[in-house]
Length: 237
Image (cartoon, rainbow, N blue to C red; front, side, top):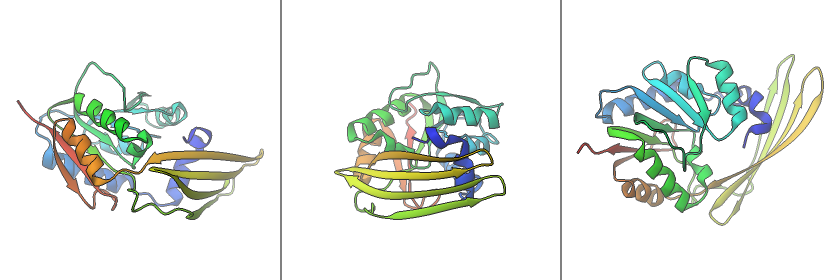
C-alpha cells in the first residue's frame, strides 16, 4: 500500500485539501443519530496515519488498526495518546467490544473480493456492542470507475518537492491505481512506485454484507464527502 511513502502521506493529502476535521464532525453526527449505547469506545479500522482517529478522539475513546506498519509508525509518532496497532479488517480479533467502529476513506475497497467484504463486515459487527454502530465509507462501484484516468499532484516546499502521477486501470471487478513518485530533498531524489488494487463493489454488495452480519442498515448517498456512507446498528436483544 503506502509503505514506501508513508512519511509523505500527510503532505500529499494536505495538498489535496482533504478535510479530515469536517469529515470527523459529520461522522460524529451520524454516530450520535444512530448509536444506541452509552459508551465511548471507538475502533478506527484502516486508520492510516491517524488523522481521522485524532479528530474522533475529541468525542470518543479511540483505538486504531491498520495493515501498513509504516503508517502505524507515523500515527504513533503524531498521536502518542491514542493506541495504534497492526490489524487486518478481515480477521482482527480483540477480546472486547466497541460502541463505534469506523472504516473510512474508502479503505474497505482493499478487501478486493465479495467474500472478503462479507468476512470483514461480519468481523466488524462481531466486535460491536449491542446498540453499537458501524460506519463504512465505500470505494467506487464498477459503473463509477474510469479506466485510463491520469492525475498529477505536486508539492513545492523549500525543503521538500514531490510529484505524484497516478493512472487508473481495471481487471474484472478490481480497480487498479499505479502511483509513480519523484521525491526530492536536500539529500537526494528518490523514485518510488506503488500499485493499489481495490474491489469495485455495488450498493447491493455492501447491503448484502451488512444484512448478512445481522446489522440494521442505513445508506446515506452523500456520506462524509460525497462518496456515500453505509451505517449498520447492532440490534439490542
